[in-house]
Amino acid sequence: MTREEFNTISASIPHQPGCYKYYDEHSEILYVGKAKDLRKRVGSYFNKTQDNFKTRKLVSLIHHIEFTVTDSEHDAFLLENSLIKHYQPKYNIELKDDKTYPYIVIKKESFPRVFFTRRLIKDGSEYLGPFTGVGRVRELLELVKQNIPLRTCNLNLSPQNIARGKFKVCLEYHLGNCKGPCEGLQSAEDYAQNLQQVKHIMKGNIGEVLKYLKAEMTQLASEMKYERAAVIKSKIDTLQNYQSRSSVVNPHLGNIDVVSLVEGGADVAFVNYMMVNGGSIIYAKTVQVEKKLEEDDSDVLSLALARLRETFQSNTREVVAPFEIEVAEDNLQVTIPKAGDKKKLLDLSIKNGEIFRDELRKKNTLLLGKTAKENPTQVLEELQDALQLPDLPTHIECFDNSNFQGAYPVSAMVCFLNGIPAKNEYRHFHVKTVEGINDFATMSEVVFRRYKRLMEEKKPLPQLVIIDGGKGQLGAALESIEKLGLTGRMTLVGLAKREESIFFPGDSEPLQLPYDSPAHLLVRRIRDEVHRFGITFHRQIRSKGTFKNELEGIPGIGEKTATDLLKMFRSVAKIKQLTQREIAKAVGTSKARLIWEHFHANDPDAPIAE
Image (tube, rainbow, N blue to C red):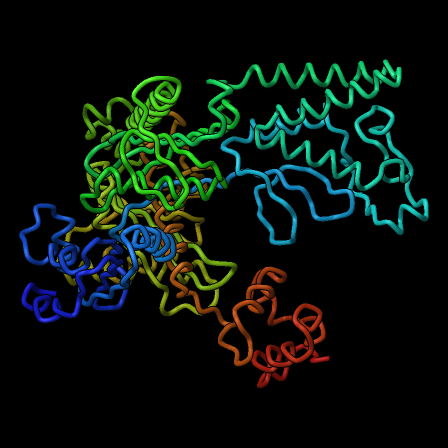
């Protein structure tokens, strides 16, 4: 969209607060922003010369604009946060945090079990967390086991089974770790009280558990049950010792969140988040933020805080920050401390952010070895020597295939120039000519398309091409190179997924580079980068709803039914082999008939329908 084109539509944009969305010519969303005055803010992109290259690029891609008016600037902030989270636009800031967090689940069942998990299943169970490290989860579970008697068995403790006397107490009962609900020796109400103490421990409310145990100890002592009271006393001592090991700042601080921002360069920042409960730091997390345009620090920190509070399910009413920020909740107070305990907490948060940034820089530097920083050519020369390449591999490309729930393959390619990622040369591939899952054919197609395009555009070819996969994928890629007449103009090697061994076409034995050599570290980095790039592609596609799987294409079959089938049977190919009766067990008779007839209406060798 040119300045002149914008001027023709500017009158339709109101002088009111709201959110605006920029789209490209393919109606893909590019950027979401908020404004106190929509016309002035949007006009600033077109009516002045942009100093930032990324902003100029964004403006050149804008094809049309949509906007939503809100009642206030705060409502615009809430809407912007929601839209960015939903659409994940290319030019908005992005939190780089792909970690799957551990949780502790209280299972929805009679006398619920409590255990560690990384999977959140919508089955009515209660999930506590997420936690920032597995070590803390295991420590908390051990603390619970020592102090709160809960069952650890997998028995179906329904009231009917207990009434029938179906079970007998186990060793855990005799050790005092369980009160024997399986034999009806513990009521559901008493068990529920124990679960409440577990929740307090998981949320850092050790004081509530101590209060409960002290009351129980006092009651037992008044009844002259001194041995049982002594057991409770030892549990109290254990909990108090655990509490003293926590990072207690000041118990009078109560429950607050602390957030800080550390600059990492023109395009990167690091946000540290700490959750303080009862004066103790119970969570601490630093995330990397990629800034796509010249975002204000306040905007970056506001967005990151909103996402982190949601992730860690924080409901505190105060957040400590280094400067004024906009917050999503109306009743959330922002404090900018100048001295005292809150200032110490903020300084600690900044220190943690700086340590994370510095360690990440060291890691990235060491990934290619110390010599890579001083002389990247030395690493490439080592790789050339190890692989016996005819030319120095200043241009390396790597391909990887992936698929979603056993269907709809896509591929990714990354490019490294002089040992450094050249992200503007990265490519995604929607597979066009291959039906079903066929890694060999998929690799053949994408390699052919990539180098046919380079030949047509008369661009330089890479010296080294890495195929992430087995000998079959490497052979398929080599066939495409031969079809294009490029044999001998580049070197193709395969990279074994598990052993990280390198093999050449026709070789029976792979080459294993020294594990800690700079050349091996470079190959690993390239492999990790193509995996990351491919996974990001999948997530973008799924979030935009562009995966239209074969099952959803059947009239009468919706997204939920298709998803349930894929979860149960893993792939469309497996579903095609089932009888109508087998499918009906999962989705019912009517839908099973639609699915079976779609796949086998004209197939004389189909499995029997009924």
